[in-house]
Amino acid sequence: MRLGMHTYSLYHHGVAEDWAGFKLPWGRQMTLFEMMDYVAELGLEGLHLDAKAFDEMNAPYYDRVKDYAAARDLYLEYNFALSSGNYDASVQQDIEAGIAVAHSIGADIAKIGMNITRPRPVAASKFHPDVKRQLEDVLSKVRRALPHVEKTGVKLALENHTDAFSEEVLWLLDQIDHPQIGACIDTVNALHVTENPITAIRNLAPRAFTNHFRDNQIIIEPWGFRLTGAAVGEGDLDMETAYGLISANPAMQRINIELDLDCPRDDMQKALDMERAALERSIAFCRNVLGIGAS
Image 1 (cartoon, rainbow, N blue to C red):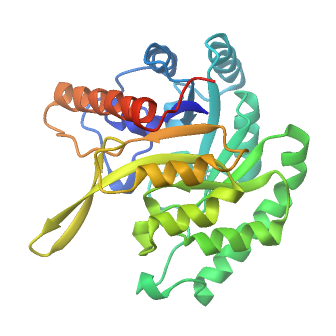
Image 2 (tube, rainbow, N blue to C red):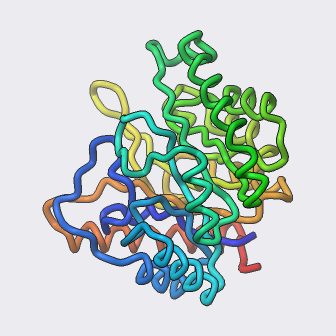
């Protein structure tokens, strides 16, 4: 099993999607090439990245990224979302365009966020007619892209993002029924649609190509509770069971650490230090507790 990092782990460094209205008050703090050097120094073996990680978006630049990663024996996976206008449109692409970028940088997997808009109450919305229509639209788009998938060899992974129940992802995979179309498991996201994360992982693990290995703390507040990011192993999710389910699939050969920390936005250096320290602790947990070693 190889251990890598989702570039969202360093979003306070300015190298990841501006998710859910987040705006960074300072500029980008590292280039993609500096990030590849950094993760290699930490002993990580790959990056799961989106368009915000790129310093440029053009063919010569993609060639440089591919060669730089290969020289450091880093795997690359590409993360994009279908066009919807929600959140950060700069990481949204048609499937064919996402496949092209993935292929250009030497990524063998491209993750798709479906950007499903759910009706309320969310807990009662599994396969709601409005959702089903959107799932059918995703199905049509993936089917149209299959020639590009087959030509490039890039595998597509549909994520249980904050907008999808695991059973909905499985329904799509069953309809598509193609060996290069699978799932991406996010170990926290099921909570956003009121699904048990372990249930979602158990459902998706046998069909998955990749993952976002993320932990969160559940903090009780007077008006309810909130989820907040944590280093892997320091939150309230059962990461040992999650890893056991994921690693049982022989096709899953990578773990991508993802962090979503609540860092101060009035002290840049403190925020950067918090992200880097949490990443180091996450790596230590994955190596020392879970036993994930270099392949």
